Length: 148
Length: 148
Length: 77
Length: 77
Image 1 (tube, rainbow over the protein chains, first blue to last red):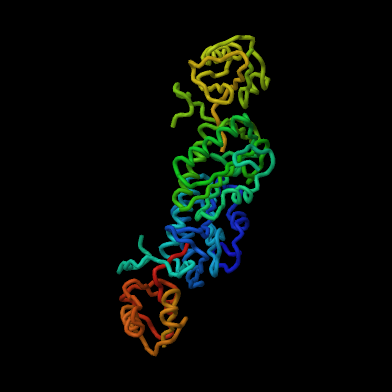
Image 2 (cartoon, rainbow over the protein chains, first blue to last red):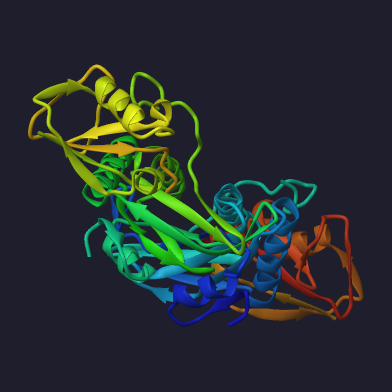
């Protein structure tokens, strides 16, 4: 297990939680994103995720470094699964430990927002009567995607 | 396993996570509070938690009901362990599922704040050279402890 | 007869987990004053009372048969 | 020779995962214009380019030997 990884097999939360736990950690937050059956009244059959794997792992590690900079003392592990996933499967896990709880919550939420901004992973929703690659068709800023 | 319980044995996160997961859940947040080795420069040997068990379980359930009222669609499980606990042991777990992530984060953080306000559980810190029951020696408001 | 329970610091201070008070009725305020008198250092201004597992106000009346608990400042989590 | 990769919607649009372009150097802007011309509907205004696994700006210059990836709007999480 790598602390920042793209995986093709089911995500087991335990090993990421164990990775971030240490004697100085008073709080651990674990976020898991799951495949949901209904989105905007449309029934999802399954999702297919694709990634630019080496860059995605670099960007996950970058997010981890940003978190450690912004919330000193946090320890982070993030994994995203790719391939076909069905209802309730875990697509992404973010595990954060911290001496105190506030940072564990804030840093965790920061991570999922950043993943949705900069990590090259794409989700295709497959319904009974169609499919679509998701991702806002917004124009990227000229100064680059990295800026907040 | 009860969704709102006081337990005397080690907390296993998996069963609380499984309890809150369902086909409509897109996000799950799990908070675990752990025994930390150092607090304000003092080394903790172990903690001893005590509860007024039946009332504590009622108050945990009340917090769950408050969460469901404030964030419709969330599903909640909370457990707090009592007895002697050592470094890195889980003292409390809060598992929250929600269709969307924002509510899962917010409701989870709300739960731990409310636990610290209204649930009759007490923590004694035991160090190498002493021990102390924790809990702010603040005066309770005349209108009662329940008010936010 | 009113049953009262002690927890945490108060259990150690009083040296007991519970006891019964031979009273037909009293207010929460009177119960706290009784405790402070009986157990110096009780700290009634920081202690809450639960009656039948619900937090009570100072003016609430406790009846014989009720189960009361002294709740010092909580510190769970 | 510049290597380019396609993902998600762009992989399906172009019908390929990667290819090479016989150029010594070009800017990111020129690469996006080449893609739009070669693959109508590419949507260059919503596509980012990564050069050697880092997001690049429109003015950045790509050299022969660089690995580029077209990054349509991401949707992980």
